[in-house]
Image 1 (cartoon, helix red, strand yellow):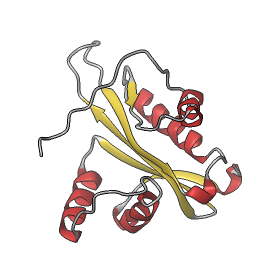
Image 2 (tube, one colour):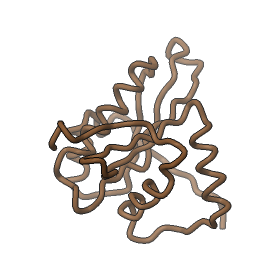
Image 3 (spheres, helix red, strand yellow):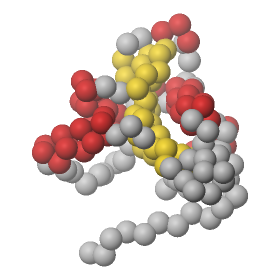
Length: 152
């Protein structure tokens, strides 16, 4: 990664199209939302003071993004916890350290806000992806993750 042309910032009002373009690299097939639903969700993300959508730019081009949500908590001395979701880097820019830098930034942000832990789930099973997350500071096997989906 070329640090002199790389910046990480929080997404702003005008970043919706850039984020959506990055999300095209997230899943091969994703459920599509309507324009109104997308705009409403974007507004909610931008306005939520506990949700942080970070964008890493290289040479002024958005190449990686992730979302950090900080959740208030009554345990662990009332310290919040964080959840990271939708980590993605453009296919042509992968394996250059962008996502690692972005995750380190998000983790630092969470630690500054006194989070006692940050969780991340991945549906990927390949060892390279799991090793990537471990290399970025996440520990595998500490807890078991479960997901519930709404009934059809």
